[in-house]
Amino acid sequence: MRVPVWLRPILFLATLLVIWEIAVRTHPGLILPGPIAVFAGLEELLHHGLLLKYIVASLFRVTWGFVLASITAIPLGLALGWYRRGEMAFNPLSQIFRPISPLAWIPIAILWFGVGDLSSIFLIFVACFFPLLLTAMSAVHNIPAVYIHAGRNFGLSSAAFVARVLYPAVIPQLLVGMRITLGVAWLVVVAAEMIAVNSGLGFLIVDARNAGNRYDLVVAGMAVIGVIGLLLDLSMRSLEQIKSFRWRSSED
Image (tube, rainbow, N blue to C red; front, top):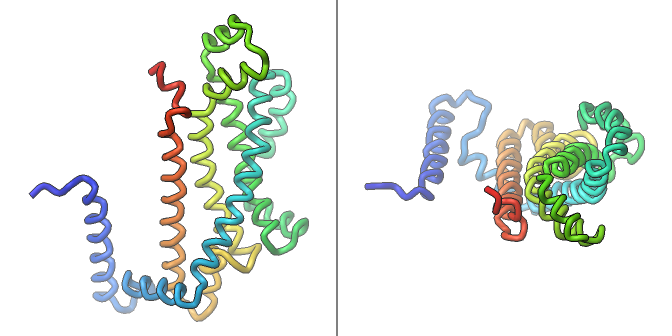
């Protein structure tokens, strides 16, 4: 009997869970909890209302940090990509700050904003800003010259050129960059919550580890982080399928 394609990942995941549970039961001395214990931990978090609270807290920080970085880095990157002199002036500064890990900013974030949401949002902003900036600059550089010449030959105004040529030409590459950067933001918020705040999924993992070695809750938090990361990636991928965002595909 042929297994449907959509069912194969589910069967594979179920097989891994069964193997995981069998391994834990066969070696009871293992610290790692089995999937049944992890699901029980998730039920406990749901019962006490903590799971939804921590998920909302993490998503709140990611949303603000990612949005703030997008509305600042993307327009700046498009402008620098279009005006090469501005890029030449700004590029050395961006290349100095870009390799610095966002986590290296944690002491400064706490010093400036204290322990709370603002410090985490700042760290996410820093993590997202430079990847989005470079993506926007690269998107402008990759606009085919024929599109630019055509827009100029038709005598488009600056606003019309941006709306009818620049925007549709760069949006596919921007969406790919935003998808990758959103994954980075989700990684950074979890790390930041382990240090700089007292809520969120990252805090859940550290708190569960310190509260009597509750590794069932630790793994439960890790599983939730992975599932939400997958959903965020799927949501960004769905944007790539919107017809108005696939203008450049006509040339393929």
